[in-house]
Image (cartoon, rainbow, N blue to C red; front, top):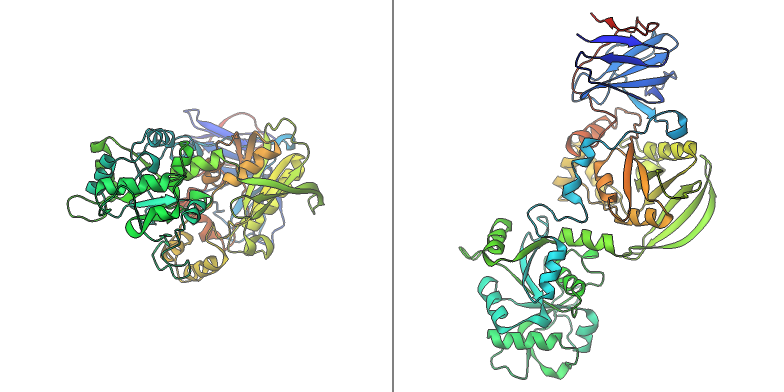
Length: 551
């Protein structure tokens, strides 16, 4: 049997097991435009995973519960504290969480957030793969590494090694386990030095992933037909030799040079770029050998289960390009500070910092309020660009409301940073694709299903640039304004630590309710504390601090 007690500011509901947990939010407000009433000193009461809101208004306490997993928060009747204007369908969210000196606690990082740690931790590999440092060391020692790309790309594995370390025995191993098409990835300046033009121009390239093949070659000296393991090893070593000249090669031949895209896997998540990146990280010449692995049973391309078998049998490291991207993003400078100016906003005055990406030239902005000082416990919002929501006030999402709320909270707190990341439109798919996804949503798909039907990732945003901006500004530990676990995980590392989370609970409308529910159920977003059961408390005992048995 639950019991209820109330004081002038807090309503407590506890079970005999003593598992009650009380946290305060500053106010709750109806989304119904006809209702202007704000309840102050609202209190969340959690019993394990059960949560309700206790509202204190002029007429006393009223509890608001979540009674259905499909609702974020709804009021079960048509009145609250005698207010007759509230519709049955009115929904509530905390529209303001007080921070620091504003007399409310900042939510701690929740279990739901920390459960993502191992999946995307920048210093640890994806489950089932070797670490990037292990792979780098094997490349340095002249060993093979299996590199796997994304399942949405080729979903294939390449056998990779440093070209400067190749031997006839290594080449025989490649031919035995691979397709027989042996490639050598090289930087543009080396291809130009050896007069190796592209096989077709970029405009004429119709290969699925636009792999940049040059004309094929054989070494002239010390080879016969050019196709044997010994001859191909000779050709590869000649390509890796910085003293080689254009006249040292026959064209065409049996080795296929590939043009590496400058920036590597940070610009193109391909095997060509991964192979050169690994050799550079190993301190070797930026030339690598690669060949796709085949399934030895039927000759088809080897997929991940078979690749794992090969790696185990041959004692090879196996890594993912996704892990290599994360490794590089953490360790390399991605942005530079371009300019800074004082900027008066409707919320107050801030210092606006412009940062330019060294990868693609996109400019991002950081709004800094107050003195960062020692960088500890900074209130931070990392906001993804949303043209329709932030600029035009689209009701299909909560982006614009979250942006405004974050700026208001930072202003009230007097110290904080908002980083606005451009290029994140539509969770990374771009404006045009986002509008196409909206059409599919109007036809009945949710936001996740729409992206998938278009063949696009559900969320392709990456927060490394935002993290580097924060670090450059002097932030070291932060209280993160977010409902999204991916932002917590994406900002880990980089010399940053997330010590708390402040939920951004904006208004729920008919237009965005389904969108918010999809993010909660399918994408792991957390809106305050979750409620998985019904909890009703009586407000009649508001003047008593003694526990009374509930009916």
